[in-house]
Amino acid sequence: MSSTSIPKQSDLGYRRLVKLSMMTFTQTSQKFGQWSDIRANTVYGLGFASEAELNKFIEKFQEVKEASRSSAIHKGQQINGTHSGESGPIICPMSKSPTPHRSTTVSSSTGDPMNEDILNTHVNVSGAGELSSLNTNSLPIEHNEINSSSGSLRGTLVAHQRSQSLSGLQVNKLMSESPKHSVAGAKEKLGSTIMLPQSSTEAQLKYENERLKLALAQSSANAKKWEIELQTLKNNNARLTGALQESTVNVEEWKRQLQSLKEENGKMRIRILELEASHGNPEALEELSKEMNNLRTSAASLDSAIKQKDKEIELLKKSLESHVQVYGASQKVEDKLKLLLTENENLRSQVSQLQDHSDISKFSDNARKGMLDQVNLRLGQNIQELRTIHQEFSALLNTS
Image (cartoon, rainbow, N blue to C red):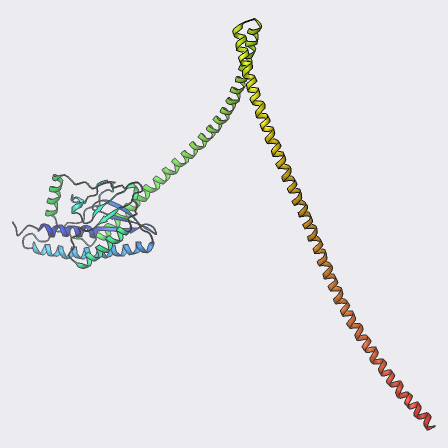
């Protein structure tokens, strides 16, 4: 019996390696991705601070996945070689993907609780749906490469604790399953040794495609439903706003009517007291006198208030006059400044005109000087010619 039974530790490690190799991580946007486990039928949304960190996480995830896949194949071959003498290798094809459903208890498809699963994930989705921690210490992989990759993967996940869950998936706590279910799962694990077929990648991709299509259709339906609800809320808000404005107008009108009724009631009471006093009723006379005293005191208080208001009005008038005077003075100063500015501009224009005139006069003086020089030169030439002629005449006279 001992020669045909599979060791529990090696079988557990092999199944964990198979589960890790079947997990996928898909990038959904620039900083977000989805970690999906087909066997556990769960999807987690992970958020990162930057796209570079997301790419780094994807690389580490692929390294761990490839290492676990190669280790699973190697260990499966070892297990199959151990039991090939009696029953040969037992290969179970990959089961069909179950229908995606939302669950608050994260467990594997073989019935193991998550304390025996590949990833000891403790998810806390309180309020905004943040993935608080992801513990991968229970991964029993013997290769150093897988251990180092798992450590770096775990460090990357702990550094990015802010994450969001897809399609409202909120996992509150991890629940252990019943003993009967655990025994059935153990029997199933002992009775089957899972080997990855070559078409598992294609089947997995098809399943992921279908699941994403369903999620997209559900999100589109939810978006349409939310748009309808938003429009309904907007309409209700507009209707309630109109009703509130109408009620406010009605309240103001009712206040005015109440005040007019109070005034009319006071007048009627005074009239009744006057009529009763005219008939000689002492109580009516006393009531009328009290009412008159109250009216006198109220009139006196109103007079004092009016005087106070008159004083305030006088003070305001004085302050207004002072402000007007200051404004008038400032206006005068501003007018003077404008006049000075205009005079300055006029003086500048006159200076420019005088400068132009001086330039013109300088030019004309230079031209006149040139003309005089030419006249002087001609005059000198003429004088020289006359002198030569005079000398010639003198010479002729002397010779004759």
